Length: 474
Image (cartoon, rainbow, N blue to C red; front, side, top):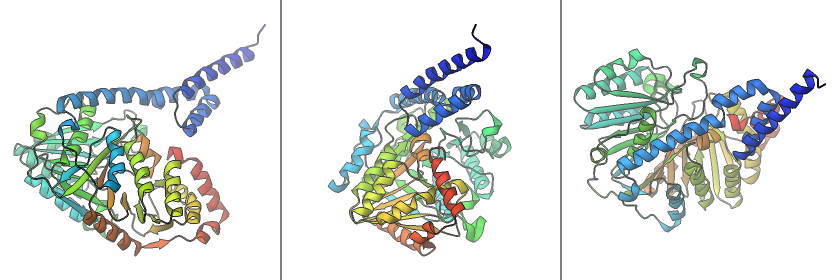
């Protein structure tokens, strides 16, 4: 007669093997696959519950719903087939083609492109654009705090809604969890619409790192003026409210045909969050007044697609550099392809420089980021830590000819787990301005030396190595 213990062991083994086959057949990354196998094997019952509610199958269900809403938006608003793609310099054509092949927008004309490297100037420009709006204002943000900057903008949006402007505000349910009904009441009472992206029902997860978030920062006014970049709506980005400790960040304002690409991203996310498509496409996609002297390509990326256009565009951009490559990122946890591309650029003789914060908002991320530096420095990459302010900018400058400004960090979370947006600017004047800003930032930074890493205390090096093991989860 089979004992109770033997029967339990046989059932547990059979269950583990069956679930292992399901997970392996999903063809996820090796690290993610092994992690889930360990969870299910070591915590059979708890692991099953976690896998059921927040695991890959849960994500797949949301991806299916996302694809359905994206198809509806495409049918309602049309696709980029009606938008004339602009040709770029032959040296940049391969980079532009990566995003287009992944289903994102082609390079489009911009009548103007303006860079902002401090919050006060960026918020002033956003405020002006909203004040001048006559038809609609669409906003999408990961973090919107109920502080001075946030509440002032809500008051402005409420005023515009009372004037008859259509205001839609899309907020991430985790990043903007501090906003309460009372903060948004003036906007709603004025006729503005507020929606939450991927709401979290369990309070335990609110305010914590979670997947399937919209990390995008988008403003579109009348379909003619758009903003994106690293800045959320919060006091920490502006010296007016935070003083000398204000975060160093970069934001971008564009006008002209390229705004259509930002509008489409917003419409897609709004449809997913509300299950309502944005109607009357002609009013939200107006014809540009002029051709524009600049060329910009807007790329969206998220876990609903296996094309990963931003990650692959970053990879291509790094590999295309022949003279110089300047990268600024607050969260540096590169996957293997990006790490190999950075090392390869330095080995080719490209002046490759990396700027990360001296101290971020996560000790684990800081430790993990520094674990990658020895091999980068050994290849010839020059790495710097910026401080004491926190650098939150996400930018890349390639050969002082092409620049990238967006919301994506150099980490797996940005590449594959969150919804991001990046603007590829094929314009030497704008790129040169961003290169100057990078060199100005180096005056407030300290360059890493190999001895800083090899000579660090044992416990710190152990912490860095351990944190690196957790990189897929950070």
